[in-house]
Image (cartoon, rainbow, N blue to C red; front, side, top):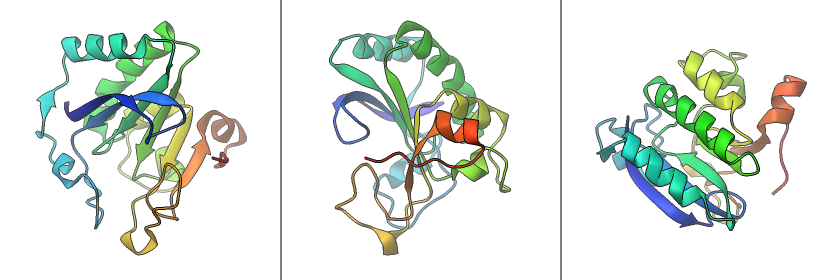
Length: 173
């Protein structure tokens, strides 16, 4: 897996001060995407053990609320299969910090309720996430006044409540 960027102090992509990882590779190709260079799976740098350790160090300070996964598309199978063990490590080391993920897939696609190309690793990654911002960016529904989302069709979901209820449970932000 490659990544395009790491933001060590980010307040735009989730609640509180966060560490954000922008992975490379996305097949959604949303019109008006703010990060189209990350559609290419080979864009950026290789995600290595050194990268993972760097992210762990960045997550260590008490003022960091958690980790945000963006892209690209974290739930593309090539990315999710690498992110699962990394997020498991984050969960073990920082059980009090939360994990947000942004995806063009909907919750229903990631859980298999609707057909999609999301695979087993994507479902496993979803189970490790606290908050999911789901749905493709739709340029016609772009709204810069929305907090933590780019278009009005996107939802901010409490993943664990959604999984327990077996339906999308929106989080109020």
